[in-house]
Length: 365
Ligand code: UDP
Image (cartoon, rainbow, N blue to C red; front, side, top):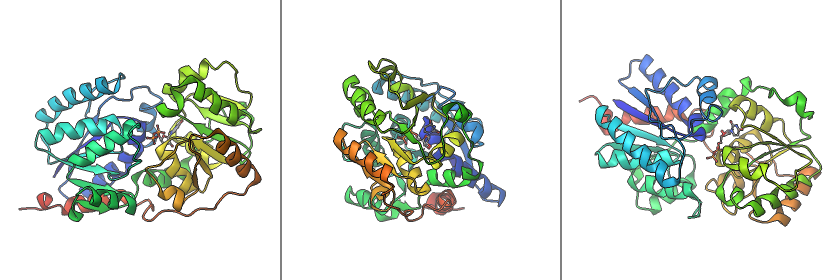
């Protein structure tokens, strides 16, 4: 069985690393399974791409499509044009896409138009917020894909409701958590730690990159003001999308310490040791749940509701007062404990590959 695995942006790399490892393990035990890794080049900054290949021991991609940055349409178009050529030159039995980035959607459309099967890892999750580019990527991808590897029962229900058949859905857990659990013992104290002058459990971590939080300078400035008022150091690895509006803030925050995006092993250490995390990231909501660290999500909705119902996540919404109240609660130490969602056990990729090998077209004739 020949597989083409797609990755394009930072949150994809944590999701493909364990799948590659599981495929290689299956090969070693004599299974007929091969893969080709395609990097679309959606993220090309070393700090958002190269470092993850090194730290997560992901092999060098067979090809980099060099999509680069641009508007949603420009990126989608470039990825589609280049992937169409690549897939024509390298036919495959199955294209695997992960997550909800532009590459996920663009490569799914190309593959299906070239009559190639698609499996979506992390299929079925929905924020029901059409203002999020990722929600559009999810809906398009899931309306075309043939197989769905899901992280939650809620995702299964969303897919069934949209007409997907039960035989197409495999509830396997979360590959991002496979990576977290494997890499946790190797987590690295950030090189900048001494300079930050912080103490474990007495600082917060902040990540923000969703257009709804960072693109409007006034709203972004208001978030910064409330967070700065917390009275604890806040480490803020600034996503490239957020850089401009952070550097042009009229009032420079006193407690917020900005830095470049961190490597995975440093970031995991930083959140593990923190008092709480403030974020609008999808993956970080999941990682904090597994680490048992309070998570305050600056969004009105989440496509990962199990992090709220089971885990340590709380939705703050678009509400500055609510953030202030949540920060007071964090400081008082009065946050829910949380538990780990079903099947987020570090063995998801193994289950994915076992299911792949069982698909009808994968069986020896
Ligand atoms: N992350 C990282 N360094 C950072 C910030 C985040 O390695 O400075 C990791 C984080 O641990 C998680 C992933 O990046 O695994 C989340 O990516 P992002 O927030 O860009 O995407 P989303 O999950 O929102 O799609």
